[in-house]
Every structure is written in C-alpha cells, then in structure tokens.
Amino acid sequence: MESLFAGRGADAEFVVLYGSMARGDWSRGSDFDVLVGLRRDPEPRIIDRLGTFSNFADDGWVEALPYTLDEIERMFRRFNLVVLAALRDGVVLFDRGMWGDLQRRYQGLVEQRLLLSEGRTWTWTEEAERQIGAGFPP
Image 1: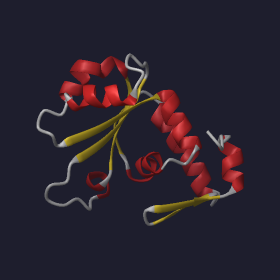
Image 2 (image 1 turned 180 degrees about the vertical axis):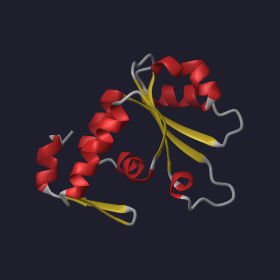
Image 3 (image 1 turned 30 degrees about the vertical axis):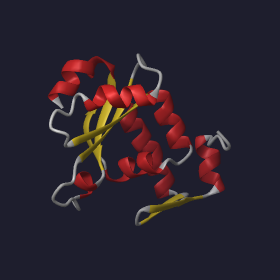
C-alpha cells in the first residue's frame, strides 16, 4: 500500500480491499484483491495499468485492479460483479468521496430490494436499471 501511494497516490480516488480477505473466508495462499479508482488516466489501456500496478506489489500478494472513475461508474451501472462484491463486502482503505457515494447508491438499491445478493450471484430489477441509468447495451 505504501508503494502504491508513493507511486500513484495523487491519482487515487479510492482503494478498496475486496474478495476473500475482505469477506474473511481466505485460505492459505490467498492474495489481497484491491480495487483502485483513478482520478486521472495516464495510461488509457487497462492492460498497461495492470502492468504498472503489479509493480507496486513487490511480494506478489496484492492483486490490484486499477480503473478510472468513468470505468467504475460504467461498471456500477452495468452491475459488474467485481464492483458489486466490493460494494457489499469491501473494506475501504482510502476514499476521497466517490466510493462512499457509490456505497450510498448501492445501499439504496438493496434497501428497496431492487438489487438482491444471493451468495455470489446477483439479481436486479428493471427499476434498479432505471434508477441508475444502466446503459444496456454498452
């Protein structure tokens, strides 16, 4: 985490631990899955960002997924399973405000029973799509 902030901290809007470590069902050999929201996009291709962020995990135990804020918003609007799981189970390590806003929107859908989590699967209603402006197809 320190190397991430030393190298790209100014670009980070949020950092969220998700996956087995956040849920508490990790096992020996589990890595730390981290979702990173980037405020700016110096590397437009995700494959390039993945390479850059792999350099911040010196020991190989951290798997960072670096997405721009626009990408995160699109993923949320399309009910992306990684984003939904991070919203449900994630542990916020750092947030300038966007992740908290997404969590409030997510919680509103859950409380209205428009978005339902059943184990590791999700279902949502047309009303949920309407409320968040889901752009189907992309």
